[in-house]
Image (spheres, rainbow, N blue to C red):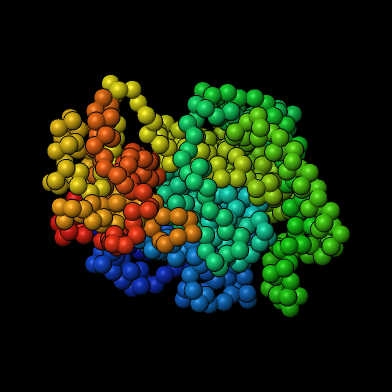
Length: 578
């Protein structure tokens, strides 16, 4: 399908259903089609998200569209894209529209919006979960391929659990929160909803960047880019005394089944207490962090009290009970709790918890909106306070037919390792971010070639002569720049260099993947001339494979930066392999 075909398909789907309450606004049909046709005419099919439709939670700015944060009287016209949205558009994605949410991203139910309450895709009056309700339902119902949400207390995980999809809550700062209406600015995350882990990770890598507009941004450390093998991980399983399912034996049984499966995948497991996690989570709404929600909203709340949803207003008003002494006391207590949790990470690498202890219907939430919201957040609201990463995945259905889910939690920057374990658990295959391991000599290696070893190029015979076979064309993740290095024969030599996090923007570069017998690897390596070498190359789908790289010292003048061409063949005017 071309991007235009995809846009037509999306529009047909939207026309065939009631757009509310999932959508607050959608891109006009003519604009969506023009964007898609422009991609078809001028876009690069090698872009990692080329023609893929997505949605954005309506507390994230999109240039030329109104941001409501779930409150019509608060609404404003955004002058520019939030950096995270701009990165996705630059990666070729098709923005379909902006989705419903619990007002001001305050709530885990999906039932606190003047635009209506989303129901779970599984029906039966079941809540969708919030606050990123519309984004989760848009993905789970197949209206878009992925969506952005936000997650302060669990809003990127609870809706995923209640709609049977993947919710990726990155380490704070990996995805920029510039251009996002703040909930708690020091804790906010942009999150990703997708149908599977591979899709969520591809979006994460396309969207992540440190920008000058975001003082909270943090790069993913180089040593954390490559995921650890699941078999090397030490799993923490909650003490049975700390598990609370609120009488829901179906959720309890599903969690036990998920843990049993995990134990067959990881290297070891042990029981761990959750009291420090729960104590930290209590600080979010029972401590001074609720006052942080007033930083961005206090003036509006005072001047427009009747414009705010009654439950949302009641939650926000509790922030006025706290003073500066409370704020420092809370910070000191959180530091103590972080120290306790850090000790646990000395003995485990990953913690598994239920995403929710039980599910509720819209009617049940209406009976006790604040108390049952707290029950939904029991296993989620500690994560950002403790600076943790998390991935939520489906875990089957209870005997009553309600969706079950579990969440893998790890220290900051363990995102790719959590994703690899989550993909192994749910998909049974090697997930994105996982390197190809060095294999015995009798086996085969996958090698990415970028220049003279490509099919038809001058050194391709070195691969063919060693028994290598072509697997197919691919492209790198947008993390590289390609240079033409001068050579005595005048043909030039391509040099692939990974960009620094704070350096120039990277590009997707065309490569070919070749399968090489393990016994022939040494001979190939010995023939690689300086300044080239063989190392790990990140592909657009998140895999890391062996490939040709260049030392950065060789890329100064007279080397020519040919990154914009997208590959060695394109630079030389030769056809690019599909």
